[in-house]
Image 1: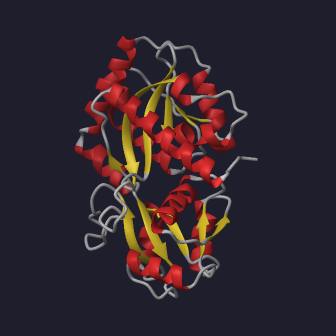
Image 2 (image 1 turned 180 degrees about the vertical axis):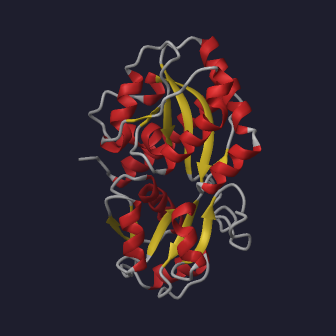
Length: 293
């Protein structure tokens, strides 16, 4: 299984949980996790796409790699909706809308009003130009009719540190990143990006509850085979993965990594989901005028 990011990140952790907690056993094969980082995930994805479609190589893909990168890296030959067979979604990592405590707001509505009353005063951080959390914030700002200044960083860690230092005031962070800082009183959470409220913050509304019904998914992750893989192999991996994801220990493990298990109804359903996500982000990338350098 190719993970297109370095060891220790959310994709790597959740991918290893699924493999080590039963996928080896269900498939009767020893699965090796192969981290191939670089080019915002494109290097690993290209290696997976070029692999023989014999069922022995599959990709642990994510929203950024599979749905955003195609619009950012316009010169790349990689087209995930063409080059891969979607098997199933496995997890979603909820996002959180957090602010530095110096910002005098305690709700999404108050943030919107404050941003309108103080144009250009608020900076928002991201893990990089064209990153999922930048695009999510661009989507939020357009829907809310507000403007904040984008400050990109080289990864989510540096962006979180900048927020703690009040170098930026707003950040759409993964739940796993923001959780300790919110619990410790160093950041204030306004909303979560998830289909429903999170048990970690049962009193915090979702963005959908706050008036943004299209913003319900965080950083989704799933399994993909190279194009040309036989349907019988696709079905076998789908069935084995569903069995593993239904295990209580796997759900606990994914939750401990800041995510939640999500199982697609079928490979076709996941294919449709990836296609709709790709179209959604392509439109936003074009509207914002982003091109990866």
